[in-house]
Image 1 (cartoon, rainbow, N blue to C red):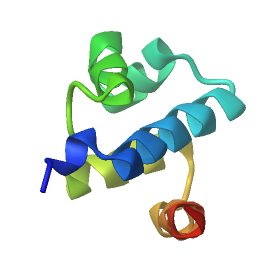
Image 2: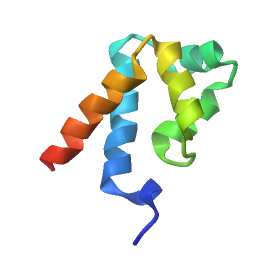
Image 3: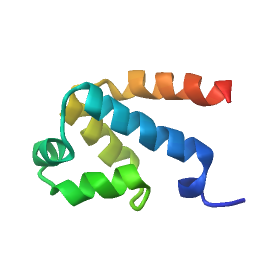
Image 4: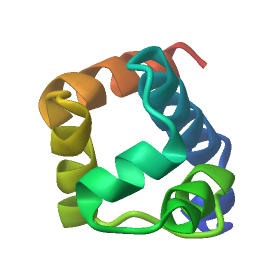
Length: 82
């Protein structure tokens, strides 16, 4: 089994993170500032070069003003269609 960071599901997860950020009108730099991180931190996550742990995911969602639970429900529906 290949590492999940290279899976189609994780690619869909990263894409959903990026499109959510963009839909909210946030740049990578702005989101990074909200988290106390630099822009490359967000870029590496979105590019799949850095994996998010659960706590980081929750902080990321809160910084965007998005419910982590609602995001995951939407993600689960997306990947269950594939």
